[in-house]
Length: 415
Ligand code: PLO
Figure (cartoon, rainbow, N blue to C red):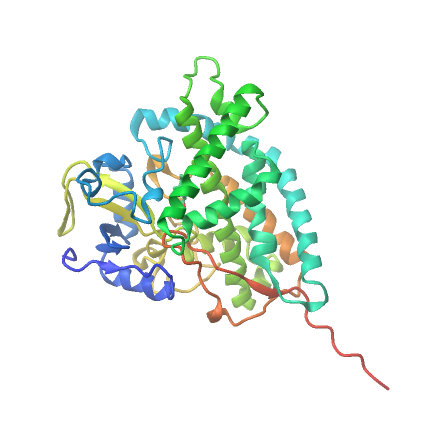
């Protein structure tokens, strides 16, 4: 039983591998302390799968006893991750299916095929920017110049968000996720984002476009109209989830490969599929560290522990990816040739499984080969162990990824 001493999570993310190991060592189900608030977490692949399809766990924050009793309030820095408005992210059952239906259509493989050339063009543009920023062997932050803007451009295109607004949105999300942001500021950012997306919905109501925002607003034949709150909630969820996590996927894959030149060489030579390298990153260095949160509507027994009615349950996806029962004793190593690369839960499981999984895989599968084809000499500019994580508790992404694009030009040979 682990319920006695919750494991504190370092909000500065000073040693993520150490922390992942520590919570795994505490058992398949254990208690975390998230900035002062206790919650169960799952680190075991099989248990996670079981609970992610258990209808006794729900997303509705009102089922959380610490919230309904007023112990947790809007002052808690992580509240925005849970009290996020009504959307496909926060409801279950039939209502959830209704709110999610159009997203599934919009992100279906056939529709994604149409997006491919658009993503290729965006990638090529950003690689041009990267070439300029890193010209002459200068150290350049690959995250800032390449990985950070790309996913917002893609999801922005899909949702009908103006390119001119992307820098503002990215700033807001950065402040929203960072533990460094004072809570009063974070609450203002949340209000500003709500106002922004409400305004977007009203504009698209007045003049619809060929985008998912307009599709949410307009009921199709036999379809039921979503309320404005639901449309806004869905858009907020898709823009947030559609960019932040994919930045992490691109950054973490580049980092893994630059730190493992042998595997990178095999990927570039076509001996290892790009797909395998991307799946292995999802497993080994999952862009989502902890997913907050589900709540028990009745007591749920898991092994020797009982998740009591009203308790909160986190899925620690990065730890789940290191489950030795699934991936063997080498689970802590990045190995794109392992047979279990695809057996991860980085996109979740069950009814809430990530509706954007195929889109994020597509973005990574376009961006990464293009990057390494254009800059075959790309190298880390600092040792791997000096790369620092963003101070974000739930998301796994680097603060910066300094690289050089070309090996330094050799000095001119004199004589
Ligand atoms: C971000 C703030 C938004 O206003 C509401 C919202 C909805 C969906 C959430 C997202 C927030 C944070 C990132 C999440 C996303 C769903 C999937 C994504 C949790 C809270 C992941 C897995 O990281």
